[in-house]
Image (cartoon, rainbow, N blue to C red; front, side, top):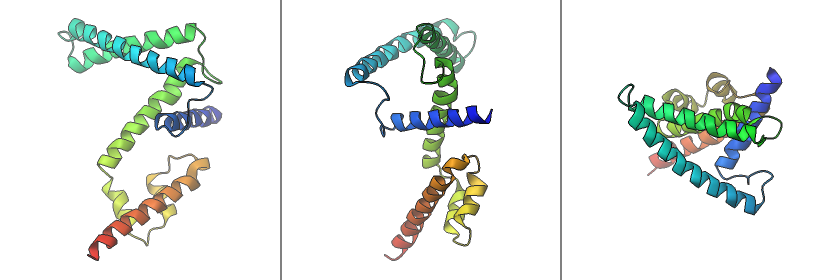
Length: 175
C-alpha cells in the first residue's frame, strides 16, 4: 500500500507540474499536443451540452448543484471508460487509476492551494512571524502530511515564505 501511495503522489506531482506549465506533456509530440488540445476543446463543448441536458432533466427532482454533478459524473465516467476500452492507459496504470489517484487529488490540491493563497491560515502566519519557532516545528505542526522524500523541499519553501513575510512586515514598517 505504501508503494501505491508513493506512486500516486509522484503522478500527482507530475500532473501538477504539467497543469502549471512547468513541464511539457510527457511522451507527446507538438502535433499530438495540438490534437489533444483540440480534443479538450471539443470535450468542453460536449460537457457543456451534457450539463445543460442534465440540468433540464434533473433540476426539478434534485437541485441545481446535484443535477449538474450528476451530469458531470455520468459524462466523466463515459469518457474515462471509453479511454479505458480504447487502451489509452497511462504509464504504469490504467486510466481510472490516473483519474482517481492523480487528477482528482491534484485538482483538489490546486483548489485548496488557491484557497490558502486567497485566505492564508492565520496560525501559520503567526508561526512564521515567531522566529523562536523553528522551520522544522512549523513543518511538523502544519505540513506533516507531506511525504518524507519532499520534506526538505517543503521546509525550504516554508523558510522562503517566512523570509518574504518578515521582509514584507519589517520592510514596510521602516517607511
